[in-house]
Amino acid sequence: MGRILVVAGTRPEFIKLAPLVGNLRARFDVCFLATGQHTDEAMLNVKAWEGFPDFDHILEWPTSKVGDAHAEAAIGISDFIEETRFDPDLVVVQGDTASCLAGALAGERMGVPVAHVEAGLRSWDIYQVEEKIRKLVDHMSALCFCPGEFEAEMLRTEFFRKFGEVKSKIYVTGNTAFDAYERCLDGRSWAVPAWVPGGRWAFATFHRTELLADPALTSRLLTAVAFAVSEADLDLRIPVHPSLLRSVGDPGKWLSDQSFEEPFPYRDVVRVLSSSARKPDVVITDSGGLSEEAAWAGIPTIIVRPSTERWQLLSRGFATLASPEDVVTKPLDLQKLIRKAINPDRPRIDQTPYVCDDGESPTAKIVKHITRFLDA
Image (cartoon, rainbow, N blue to C red; front, top):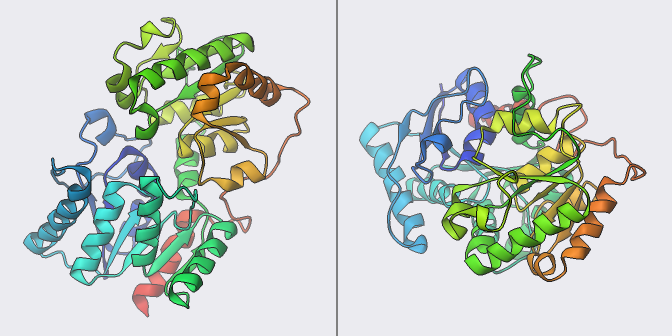
């Protein structure tokens, strides 16, 4: 039986890798390793659905500055493998986080092939840390699992330009986040949370470091979003992410008490997005994952970032891009985007982004390709 080390460090990674870990454990000896990047209990103890996999071990994340932390975390993962004598045949990582890079570096250090889930995404923002991580991990990976054909083709072109050949096995699998999304919608009845407004409303989230690094900019952003949403005759709800709290302290300085909420479980978010009667009319976010989930729920999204790696969402009309600077300086333009998004005459899109149309789930595709790779 082959051995697989699955490395994750943040809540989005836990959620997106959980369906894959469950399926891999049915075929392989799997170690689900948390790097300790997210240490908050609410982040670690996701348990978004019955049977959500437990971690086999949780490491301590390095306290060094960011550049050194990647290398130290990789060494920590390697040391864990040596101490436990797990000796994996494959290291699986996901996304574009520090933990993803640390896991890939650990694989390189140990001479173990790496599989990258959600490979090929590109924002073309050379200053974005996540963009650098995506490229590094893709180039280190023996297996690249892309969410769509567009991302796979971009990756093939990138490999040809840099190496003169496609050095990795590239597969279009769809996004495992869709499997997690579906598992949260288990068909059982559930009560709509009390914080969901009774009328039309906007759901907003902000958590990215580059957006929250300047508290003055963050406070102006919150004020502008609240103004634009109000002018569009919508109620506003913003779950206060720990990063947002660290940036601005009490959000009540810029938002009404009714606008912000404590963070809530991923399952609740998915169920509210998918609620037939009480779902938000628009999502305003800097989160790539939430913008995907909103698209699956049929909710238009305004992505507040200078650029995005989710180009399928823009090209197919699921989302619109709004730079933070424009939101802050031109809140009336944001109001126009909101009104356009919630217009009942807006064309409806029946496609499902980042999901293959052959009926096979993203998780099943990845397990199939991993099995063939390890059996070869």
